[in-house]
Image (tube, rainbow, N blue to C red; front, side):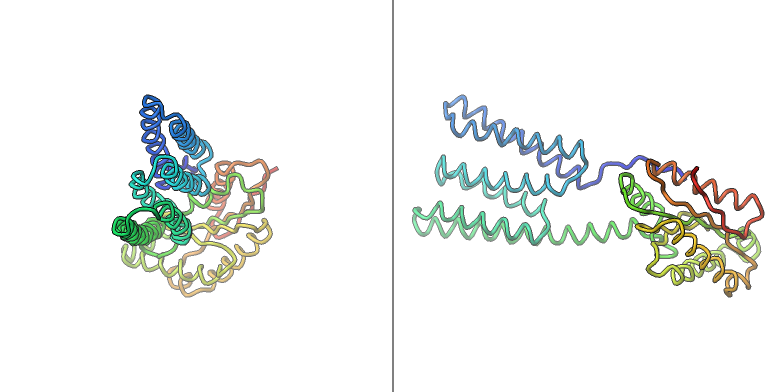
Length: 322
């Protein structure tokens, strides 16, 4: 079971794209303002543009988006407020891209708090404008903010649902191989305890050959439901593919995973599924050791399962790194 390189997430691409766009856009205005000898505003725009490039580089290197997304949101509204203070009320149009950026990058609650405070400061800066003009600007900012909030909330819900679908096995409705790869990849630099169980059904091919694939699917689904009941809150169950499953025990040592594997093995051996279809389980257990990569750990676990299959099936094999 080879651990593939993790591609850049949609979130990383969005934050990098917006920070780079922001840097280029503000940088263009910095050049124009230097040309017009508006040095104070030009220097501020230069700093903001460089900060946008810094955020881009930070996400590129660390792949972390939480702090960079918040930082670019704050710097965007700060730039709007500062530009209005330095150049006057006509710069208020910078508020509209800023509100879109804030609601697109931040969780709803953070976005509402940050933008509400920013909008109040912006409107306070415009307090000397004629009443009708001030009310017009206030209403357009409010309407834009409202629709940005609705759009952001709707997109967040849709993205969350799509992530759930992408990480869910269609047949068993448990986590799938993609989810397993993501979850284990996130543990690459994890310093705590983590163990895993890998298992599959012995002689499952005979079920498909004799009864047909529809019955085979029922057996896979019933096995998943049965093992999920045994595992409960002691680990996360995944269907890796076909009749192969995994249980990830984050924060648990080898002994915990081995005892859980014994519970699964013993309970399944007397289950109706096993008795009716004459199938058993082969299991492998391994703890990720200090200094061991995810690829090495999962490779060791995979080899242990292969050993269980080749040495008679219907057993648990311990994989210990020496």
